[in-house]
Amino acid sequence: MSCDTIRDANANAIGIACSRGRRGKRCKQCGAHATKQCDFALTGRAQGRTCDVYLCDRCAVRQPGRAVDGDSIDYCPPHARFAAKPLEQLVLGTKGNP
Image 1 (cartoon, helix red, strand yellow):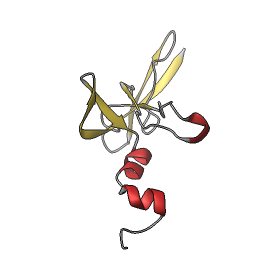
Image 2 (cartoon, one colour):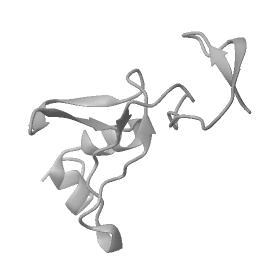
Image 3 (cartoon, one colour):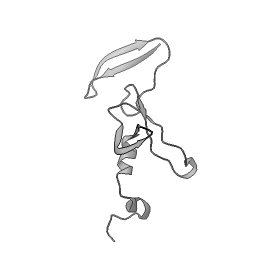
Image 4 (cartoon, helix red, strand yellow):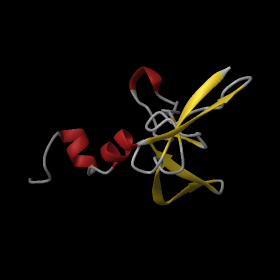
């Protein structure tokens, strides 16, 4: 039997739900039922793969204007902050000033 703490929008525990059998995938950020995975492309030895962290609809950061085969591109919060930086900051380590 597996049990999950049910939380409200402010992360306050409001109940416990127990069930028999296997648990579904859970959001790494808040523990809610996961419906998405992070699509951030990895580099280095993991090149060609994506982060794949499980996320719920509330925690996934959708990338506006980007989609692959009709499916939205979603990032986990840490990768969403990383992806928001301009390319020259990531590559050159500058702050955008020449």
